[in-house]
Image (cartoon, rainbow, N blue to C red; front, side):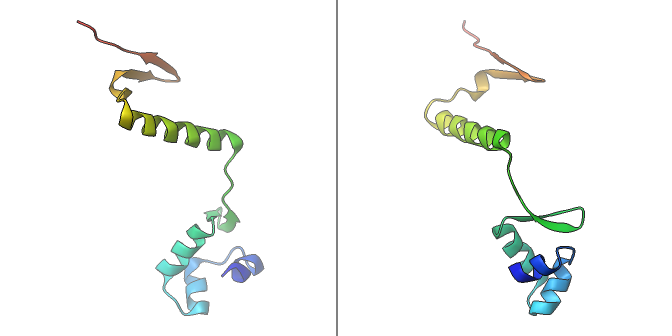
Length: 89
């Protein structure tokens, strides 16, 4: 599969499925497992920028924290600014 993509990055998943005699769905799933994505009809490796990797790790941390100490209902989100909301009566 990797050799086919390397040889012709513009080939479709259906063309690859016909060449390898497997289902189109199998080709799609395996390409995703290899970290490949289709951009402008060319198969390229999916690379995450450093900023995106940081955002993913922070989101993961916040979701894990929310399980032990629920706090997400106290946040208001508007555009790019986060405001902590605590309704104490």
